Image 1: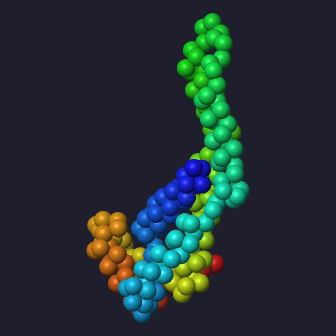
Image 2: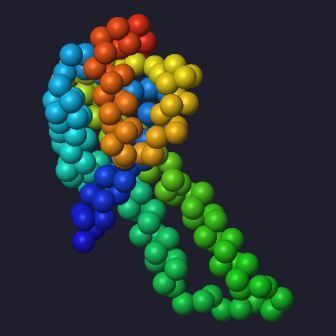
Length: 172
């Protein structure tokens, strides 16, 4: 069950990260057919989404923190000290545990790691990252994520060698 949750989390991560990155950058493969263009990027995404991340350090750190927080949630209430608000005491302890284990930071680290893997796969498959112009960004924002119109627009930009070459991002 934990593996299924991790796979779902990875897929959601890639989808949300890809959607955020599309507002300023996109990927192109000049001259590619639409099927090859979409198929190659889908293959890279699926390759990373299907990878078991349970042994990765950020996942292990996240799970340790998650388990500690779960144990805390399942603990019987501590004996009341006269004058203490038990809800406040429990809430304060939760905040301290979250600060100590920083689950959001570990999720962000894993998201970055997975996005880097997708990026490397795309580069190896011949894709080039390019910056969108403000006009292209405005057009893209008007198109619903996942819609056919958005996919067609991204393909039009990404398959045009003049656009990709003029706007490509130089990798460090």
